[in-house]
Image (tube, rainbow, N blue to C red; front, top):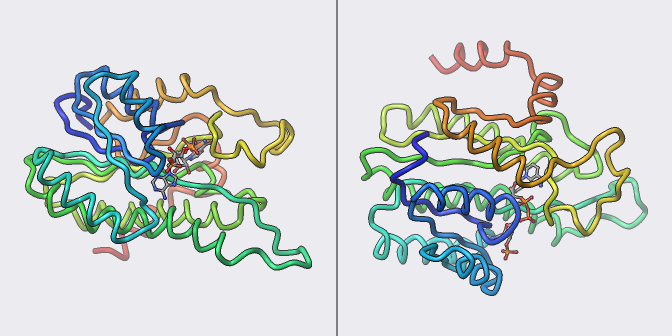
Length: 252
Ligand SMILES: NC(=O)c1ccc[n+]([C@@H]2O[C@H](COP(=O)([O-])OP(=O)(O)OC[C@H]3O[C@@H](n4cnc5c(N)ncnc54)[C@H](OP(=O)(O)O)[C@@H]3O)[C@@H](O)[C@H]2O)c1
C-alpha cells in the first residue's frame, strides 16, 4: 500500500501494535487518528505525537461504531485508510469443571469478529468515495495454527483471515484494496495478564519496535497478505498453496 499521503484511522491505536503503527505512519507525514476505549491512553499517545488525533469508541458496540463513522466523515472527509487493529485475547479451558464464562466469550467475539465486520460496513461507503483507499485487518499467525490455550481467540483470527480474503475479492473492482497483516507473537499488553515466560515452548515474543519496522516494510510493498516473522512459519505449517488454487476455482 501507499504509506504516505493518507488519512488513517487505527483502532486500538493508543497502545501496543496499534500505537507502533500509528507513530510510524505519523512520522511518514500521514494524518493519523487513533481510537480506543480508554481516553487517557489515547490522550497520552497524541500528546507524545503532536498533530495526531484521537477519537474514543468501542469496536465491540455497533452504535459506538456508527456514531464514530458519522463523526469522522464530517471531521475527516478525506479518510482513506482504516486499520482494524483493536483486539483482545483470553484463555478458556473447556475441559475444566466450571464452564467458560459466556459473557467473556461473547466480548471476545464482539471485539475480534463483529468489530471488524461492523467497522467494514460503517466505513466502506466513505472509503469507496476516495480515489485510493485501503482496509488493513490484523489477523495473527494463530489464524493458521491455533494455540489451544486461546481457543476462541485463534478462531476469531481465522475468521479475520477468511473474511479478509472474501472482502478483497468482492472489492477488487473498486478503489478499496484489502490487506491482511498477520503478526507473530509480539511483546505487548495483549497477553500481559495471562502469559508466562514458558507459555509457548521454544518461542519468545518479538520486540515491538522490531515488529513495527518489519510490518512497515511489508505494508510498503504491493502484497496484500502480509505475514511477519514467526507468522510465516505458522502459515507454512498450517496452510498449503493449494488452498488458494481451490479458492480461485470456486470463485470463478
Ligand atoms: N501481540 C501479539 O502477540 C499479537 C500477535 C498476533 C496478532 N495480534 C493482534 O494485533 C492487534 C493489536 O494487539 P496488541 O498486541 O497491540 O494488543 P494490546 O497491546 O492489548 O492493544 C490492544 C488495543 O486494542 C484496543 N481495544 C481493545 N478492545 C477494544 C474495543 N472493544 N474497542 C476499541 N479498542 C479496543 C485497546 O485499547 P482500549 O482498551 O483502551 O480500548 C488497545 O489499545 C490485535 O488485533 C491482536 O489480536 C497481536
